[in-house]
Amino acid sequence: MKESLLPDVFLQAGLFFALGSLIIPVLRYFKIPTALGYLLAGIAVGPFGLGALSDTFPVLNAISLENAEHVKILAELSIIFLLFVVGLELTPSRLWQMRNLVFGLGGAQVIVSAIVIGGIAYLWGNSLQVAMLLGLGLALSSTAMVLQWLQEKSLFAAPVGKTSFSILLLQDLAVIPILFLLTIFSADYVGSLFNFVSFSLLKMVVAALLIYFVGRFIVRYVFLFSNKHGGPEVFIALSFLTIVVSASVAHAAGLSMALGAFIAGLLLADTEYRHEVSSFIIPFKSLLLGIFFFSFGMGIDLGYLNEKPLWLFLSVIGLMSIKAIIIFCLCQLWRQSKAISVESAILLSQAGEFGLLVVGSALTMSLIQPEIGQFMLLTIGATMIVTPVLAPLARKAGQFIEDKDDKDKSAKPSEQEKDKPYVVVFGYGRIGRNIGNTLCAEGFSVIGFDKKIEKVNLARKKSYPVYLGNAATKSTQKAAGLDNALCIVIAIDSEKETKKIVEYIREANSNVPIIVRAHNIDDKKIFYGYENIDVFWEDCLISDSLSKIVLELCRPFNSKLSSEPSS
Image 1: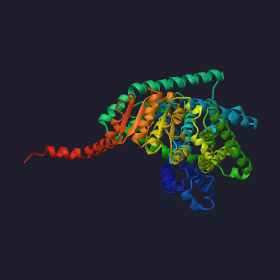
Image 2: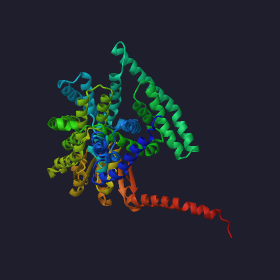
Image 3: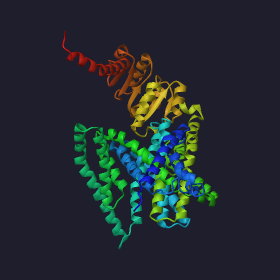
Image 4: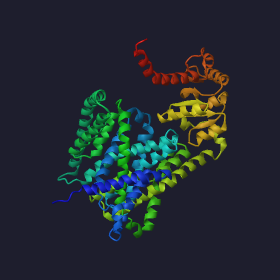
C-alpha cells in the first residue's frame, strides 16, 4: 500500500508557518526585509543547509526539509498571484500619467541592461539562449525589497520613489515576454522555428483576447450579483475563481499560467471592485511570495560558495556596478536630477525574485547547466542580501547631493523640472507637503516654494523639488513659471500674505487657476472678488468631517428612539 504524503505535507506546512509567525517578526523588528528573511530561512532549513546534516544529526529532521517539491508547487502559485496583483495595479490612467518614465526610462533600462549583461554572459562561453535568459533575468530588480523600502521610508510620492517605481513597473511587465521566451526555448517542436513562434504568438493573442472579452462582458456582472446577494466569502471565492479560470485558459493554450492571471488583474483594474479585491488578495500574495523565496532558498547549494568565493564576490560587484551605471546614465538621459539618478541607481542595482524565477525555471527545463545555474542563484541571492545595507546608503547619497550646497535650495527650478505640466505649491508646511505627496502619488509633477529653510530641508531630504523663496516676491513667482503651471496652490498660514500673493499672480496671469487655504469664513470672504479662485477654509472642512462621523455613530440610536412609541 502506497504511503500517504499527508504527513510530509503537514510537516513542511507546519515548519513554514512556524517561520512566518515566529522568525519573520524578528527580522522585521531588526529592519531586515521579509523577502530576504524567507530566502535565508530556505537556505538554512533546505537540503543543502540543515538537511545535509540530518543524517549525522537525526534530531535536525524535525527542523529541516529535504524535499522541496511541495513547496515549489506553492511557489508557482505565488508567481501567479504576484502577476495578478501587478495587473490589478496597472490602470490605464496611471500608466498614461507615467508613460514617459515607465515605457521610456523603464523600457530602456531593461533593454540596455539585458544587452550588456547578456553580451558578457555570451562572451564568457554561454550559449545564445542561456545568455539571453541571463541578460533578461538579471536586468530585473527586486520589486518586493525595493517597494518595502519605499513604503517604510514614505518615499512613494517622492520623485525618487516615482522614478524607481516606474522602472520596477516596466520590469514587472517584462516578465510576460520573458516567460513566453522560456516557453519557446523549452518546447519540443518540429519544423521551422519561425512557424512555431508565430503559432505560439497567435495562441497567446487568442487566449488573451478570449480572457479579456469574456471577462469584460461577464466578470463585472457576476461580481455585481455576488456583491448584492452574497457575503464576503462569496466575494473572495469569486476573486480566486477569476484567477484560476484565467490561468487555466492560458495554460490550455500552452502559455504561462502567470500570463492568464496578469490579464485577469487587468480585467478588474478598471472596475469598482479593484480595491476590495486587492484587500483580499494581497495578504495571500505576500504569504505565497514568501514561500517563493523560501523554495528558491532551499534550492541554493552553498557548496558552490566554497568552490568559487572570489568569482562570486566579483560577480556580485560586477553585476550591481553594471546595473547601477546603466540606470544612472539613463536617468540622466531622461533628465532626472543627479540626486534622484544616484539614489535610484543604487537602490535598483540588485537582481530580484524574477531573476530567481528565470534562472530556476531554466534549471528545471535543463536549459542551463547545473553549475552555472547554481552559481547565478548564489549571485542573485547575494545581491539581495546586500540590498538592506545599500538602501540606506542610497538614501544618504541622494540627501548629500541635494544638501551639499544650501545655495542650490534658493535657485530656480531647472528646465527639466518644468518640461511637462506641473503644479506650483507656495508654502510647503504641513498642508502643502500633504498636497504635494498626494499629487506626486497620482503621477503629477510638483514644484514647491517656502521661505523657511527648515521646511525646504525637510522636503528635499526626500528629493522633492522644493526651493527657498518668498512667494510674495515677483522673483520667486517668475522662477515658478506660473504661465506654464496647471494650477497654483497657496497653503500659507497668513491671509494677508496670501492676498498679496494672489494680487501679484493676477497682475501677471489672469487665467491660471488658484487654490487658496483659508482658516475661517472671514478669511474666505477676502477672496470673493477674484476670478478663477477656489477657497477651502479649514473650519468648514473639519466641522463637516466631524459632523458626518458623529451622525454615523448617532443615527442608529436616533432610529431606535423614533421607532419607540411615545408615552
